[in-house]
Image 1 (cartoon, rainbow, N blue to C red):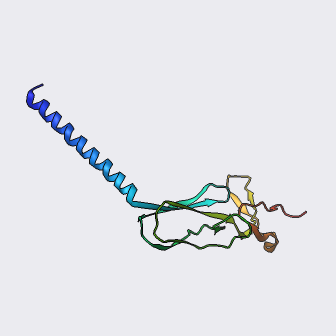
Image 2: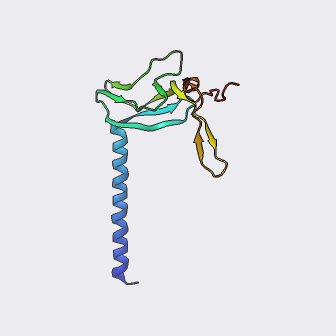
Image 3: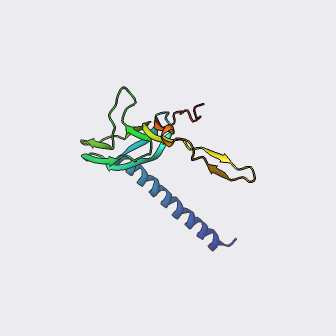
Length: 156
């Protein structure tokens, strides 16, 4: 390897190290100057229900933001699992002179939804199914909590 090639490699290495150090110092400055507020959307069992909302604010700012909680069919958003917490369609982020990171949890609990039981018979000659329309349609309609079991067997 020639002297020019070695010099070029050393020069490229110095440029890469300088760039890397600049990026690291920028990230440290960013971390020191900003705060993150995260809203986690969880089912009542703790599993994620929706992608988290994340916002970054400059330290010292006064924050007053309203975030609309995602709608999940059959579930109601609440800020607490304790007692009879109110339904929350929005989450308010209000911080005066923000100085630290915050994490807020919004829980999705099952709510009553209408259901209908429909019966299908497997055809003998193929793999298709035919709906049984001979049963009283009002007999198998009702209300139930999302995820709860219902009696789907017709009465004798």
